[in-house]
Length: 180
Image (spheres, rainbow, N blue to C red):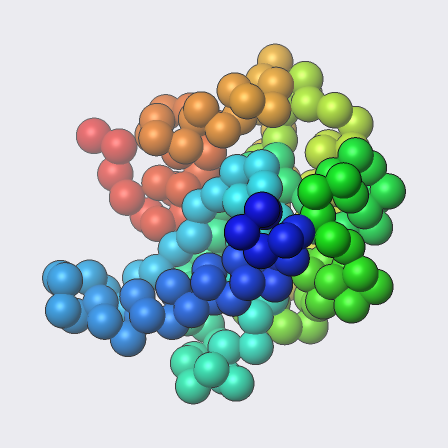
């Protein structure tokens, strides 16, 4: 955040461009552009929320460039974050709050979502995920909330690389990959 003087827009732009680059160049490194999935946790899930609500067609990409996303313990509306201690190092503006709150851009969402949280996370992390999933479902789009019993915020993130634990398991399932 120091490099951008608290501006989140360059980080979101980098993430969006990375997806575009990966899609356009997948064949050069043996990838399949039709099987791109996103996985994230914590602040990365805020960025992932911005990525999945991108107007991909404006970037010359199919609106379904991402086939799915599994996001753990994120913030999807920046209003409460703006009111928190994070405002000491993030230069929030009204424009930033509006444009980088994924929950306010569900109309641009064309990616199936699975959001993961732990029962030992703070109430705000739990509320944000529940509210985002509810809003996505109310818009008639695919979303699921998976709650890990007895996981705190950091333990949820630790499950990314494990196919038999919370986030890893959900990603394997979404990608229809075998765990054997």
